[in-house]
Image (cartoon, rainbow, N blue to C red; front, side):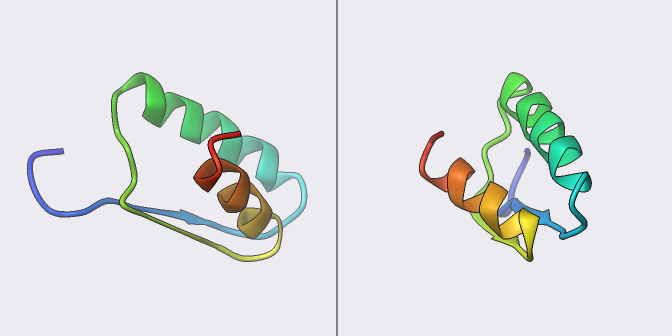
Length: 54
């Protein structure tokens, strides 16, 4: 990113959690690292795993 901060916003919805992981993997491959991670339901679980480096 050129400037500013990037937030990773993750939603709830059961199976959507799998898609979020794929999206995050693509971000990593592009060298994009979020400054903030927020989520609800399964998104909160995914966010916790991402924040812990899992």
